[in-house]
Image (tube, rainbow, N blue to C red; front, side, top):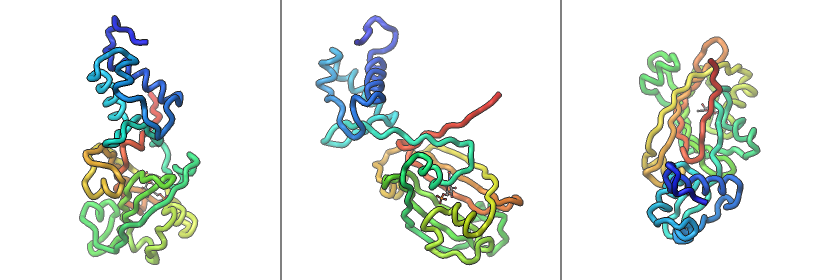
Length: 240
Ligand code: 16G
């Protein structure tokens, strides 16, 4: 099964074989993979080599470790195209997953200058600041920290953010969302966010800041989102 003469390192060959077995469903999601000892025997290699292969698969998000319990097969990541301007609710529904949110904070405040500049606010203008944990099939996917200008949406209250924000804007407010700019960065999760996302630090996250505009180039939201890097994969179509 392994080619010991190959220039491809043995741990990578093992990694590839395990990856194939995971992808073809030999080890179903949420089940344990064979123990290090079994794999050591099966491949006739050292425990170190097996461990290296498994660590790489854990780092790639195909497997996860639970202390004292073993190594399990992870759910495949959500593949999120970056080409269209869609909402979390639309994205999850398009995949047959059930979206939900938990609001952890709702305030009206005067924002920092960067938010205020992005939303083209005047001095003293206030924003709704909404913090929501977003879930797909009850699993935490992201934390969204959203700023919306009060003067644009004078009558909102906590319950206005219970469902889809974009549906509220388009259906209830009858406004047209036209475009957004986005920035993405990688990082390590902060302690407080780790608890909300149910991950253990150190863990990788993807941070996205979106500034979205209504028709007429009117900025209406700044959203700072923290995505679980083990649950998300972003894709784009590019042309030359
Ligand atoms: C997405 C957007 C976020 C928007 C939200 C609305 C990114 C990075 N963020 O999560 O800016 O506010 O969708 O979702 O894509 P909703 O309509 O389900 O509330």
